[in-house]
Image (cartoon, rainbow, N blue to C red; front, side, top):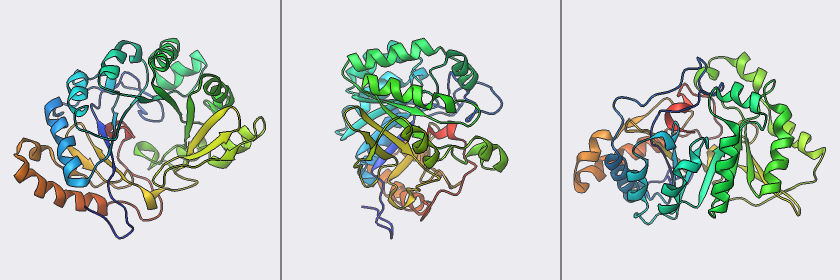
Amino acid sequence: MIVDRQGRRFRNLRVSLTSACNYACTYCVPNGKRLVAAQDELSAEAMARGVAYLIEAAGIERLRITGGEPLVSPKLEAFMAAVGQMGLQDISLTTNGQLLAKKLPILVDAGIRRINVSLDTLDASAFRGIARGGDLATVLGGMDQARAAGMKVKVNMVPLRGQNLDQVMPLLDYCLERGYELRFIELMRMGHLASDANAFLQQFVSLQQLLSLIGERYEYLQADAPVDATAVRYEIPGQGHFGVIANESVPFCRTCSRLRLSSTGWLHGCLSSSNRHYVGDLLDKPRHQALPALQRLLVKALGDKQEVAFSGGATVMKIIGG
């Protein structure tokens, strides 16, 4: 088992199935161009083999499938079928929901029971302005179908000053009514925002600002969460829960257990580090050759983690899926 001096190890793996996306969200893609798959993306078989090797080499217990947008990838069905046989404690998926209804049978067949849907507003016009693609009604319909299929649905919202702050309460009400757990995600200093402090500060909404806004309507209590959770969770008695991934306000680096594998075969041990470690060439090797080399890279990746708090990073979120 690979453990650092703070007792951290990799338990949670996030796999970016593709860098392609059918949206071009303002906080992710400043130039507004939709993203296409990288030319050197790994095959479904290689990515599944990477997951299997990381389970053995690092002790991975939970897998989250991300993108780009994973549901646009032609690798989805083959990859899902493979990882569904690996005995992981939990497999979940993050999506923008645009193709959710269409791809739902694949997810159900693969045993997916939890999804996170990125949704920043319930206003159709604002939705198009932020996402620069897609259709709000299609996303909401897909969420309803996923819930009807027995999936646990969480909603991820990035509150942005001047863009969707007025949607915090409508979206919270909507999620409470339907049994979805809403997660507010503080804006992160990544990609273009890492080098533009003014743009970041103009849009940033803090944990305390969110709680003040919610507290005007609801009484809430802090709820329990796993030790390595990224979100601070709250309960609104008798109605449901919400959470805040408060990367800036309440850093969670000290307990971070996340490892990321990009669609092009790079391991990222920390979003706040520009370091990355190529494992694509190891995935064609037999197990007895791949595992020792992979473990050496994992030691380096674990060493990339920040000790206290996220300090920003040039890595573009779209490449590694959050």
